[in-house]
Image 1: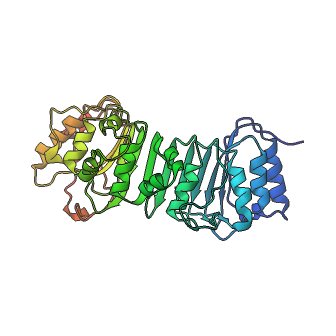
Image 2 (image 1 turned 180 degrees about the vertical axis):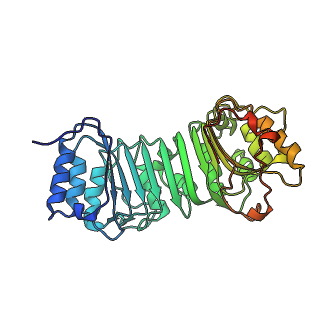
Image 3 (image 1 turned 135 degrees about the vertical axis):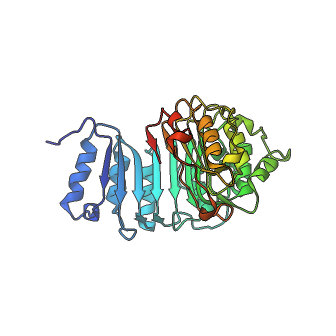
Length: 359
């Protein structure tokens, strides 16, 4: 008689011995998955050389309770690819981190054939995959017609080329959330911001090449772009916003905070204390829960500047988590050049009475 866990939400398997079909361990775990009645997330972790047997993917495909799959350092070769893609057709969420997967397309051109549609996937995370180039990874994401959230980490994000070369690119321009890591070109970021059909709820912008952040605004305002709509539509709906590196500038960051009334989480690199206004109230003052940004005193009087900054932060009536540490070391703001905010009660820190966590 199989044991059922009616409240089970996730199952993590790390020992590669479990993946061997010759071992009774896999048979046991397969029976467990098949008998479990609840919707679960399965996480499989190996050492990037272990090849999982086809039976693993067959078990996931045949089981209606598996809704999400996370793969860490898993290798999927050509013989397994077909079974793996079929297993993905029953998922609502797919995460692949540092995995090696054989390219399912023989032709390396933009017109190569595609795997089957993934009709249920709403969230997909593709982080530092090997074996499939960035264009191919975008094709995978485009095969998810219900996709609403895309997390991406690569050496590029060729959304502009993909959207114009492939009609399936339309599904990648209908997102609620985009979380970019790694590197991307500013024109690709600008294209996505300008052409995504819906106002975004979450946006994480990575390091990008060549252009400044302000040029993203300029690029996105060019009338030649299709389905153009102003950037302010995103600011009015964004709940989670993150910037890597030292871009945008301090003044631009403060301007964004004054334009995003629904923000609950904001992460950036450096804001200059000299740019903060004591009497300014950010648009998200009553909603912001998490703030992660370094406040640089620069050449300001430490006590005067600290009091001014804390007076501004005290207006964040819902703030629970404050992180004033550096996120990145950049050429624009080398770590040694930053004069951090003075965390002293007599400098106004005592006004932050809503905090649960502080760093």
